[in-house]
Length: 151
Image 1: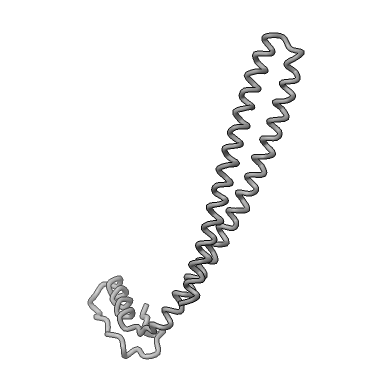
Image 2: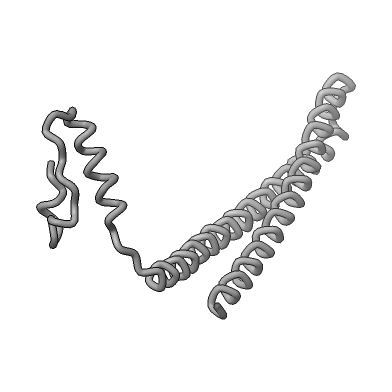
């Protein structure tokens, strides 16, 4: 395909040699087109600024979404911990009316539920830390956006 037919002044481009392979002709045309392109440096600088702002906005949107997801995860873990705690209390009340063999089985269930509560607590703490880090990241992105806006 001859790219010159899409340009305004085809005389600016070098002629292709007919004895070359088709793929080499295309590569040659593309490279010569790139070398002959005129650039406006001011336009590129403005585009770069606007692109940086767009990327920052997208990053901020992604981080805000992560914050809401961490909030949802925290709520789920808290609800899970409450349910497990309630189940533990029920099992402890049942201990009074059980035989020794049943008590041993119930004690192991209670200890397993206790470890689940501890795990939920660790997860909640982890999600809160990640949520705080995401908020810090948003603040830094806003600061970066202000610095770009000043320039």
